[in-house]
Amino acid sequence: MLRTQLRRIALPTPNRLSGAGLSKRTLVYIPGEGLPPVPILRPTLWAFAATATIFLGCAAYDVRRDVQNAKRKGLFRDGSVASYEDLEDAKHRGHVVHSLFRNPPPPPPPKWHLPGRIGEMLAGHTDAEKLILGFSALNISLLGASSLVPGAFIQYLAHTPCFSPNYTHLTSMFGHTGPLHAGINTLALLQMGPEVARTSVFEGNGSHFAAFYLSTGIFSSLGSHLGTVLPTRIYKFNRLVPGLGASGVLYGMLGAWATQYPDARLGIMFIPGSYTVENFMTALVLFEVYGLFIGFPYIHLAHAAHLSGLAVGAAYVYFDGKNRLWRPTRKLAFGGMKLVKMV
Image (cartoon, rainbow, N blue to C red; front, side, top):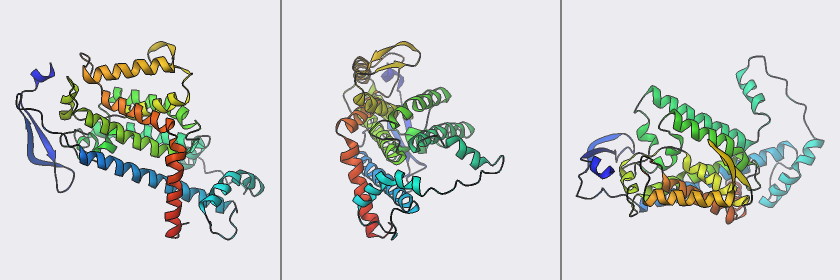
């Protein structure tokens, strides 16, 4: 059905020199002559490199914050941290020392002082929950900016497999096609995100949750990108369609939560009743696989992105990403920061 609608499509390609903007060259698709090619190697290598950079950066920020907190509480009298093990030990016993050396609370901010009021509203939230609120605000803000200046942000946010630059694998998770799309994704993030952030995998750690969130978004976008080269009935035409949205990340959080609580029950927005996680996940995977290879009439979803996000979230918990990836990355970051005397 979609094939008969594609007569001749001229798509602008990204400027090779600047990495942004549109050049005068066009990518032309003529039915009967085959679809334009989709790059595979470079986007895949970029996704792994970007994920490694994100994890290392988030781990370094987390380590530096732990060091500053430990020094502020007087856990290192000489002002230096000898080893990563010492930092971990200080982090676990810090709440006891903090109760003994607690400083008097700062004076309340002046009335109608906006930063102070925002701080008061966020005081009861964990770092991960604050991050979720920030991501939600960013989604709505970018939607508003795109509405005010139509077309100005699409080339930097949307990812089109045929010609978009690699960085749009990251930025596409913050863009949305309209208020309904952004509203549903943001509502799901606000409902599901705090539940996932409070699990034993993340323990409310904002840096760890940020690394997981951004990396899952990249790999779910890469999955959608690579899905367009599969021998599918309709999905292969998505190589010509810009992709936007955080649904891949939401599926990643769902996969992480479901892997930790396989015996729990959950409900779905707009659908009455509740279902066991096992039955729901089985039905969800079958739905997405059918939509990927066969397709549903009048329903156009990022099935490959959903399946990729689901797989990434489930694998992160199943293979113990907290102890096998996050903590070793923290230790690596500490060693590098110790070498350059940042801690």
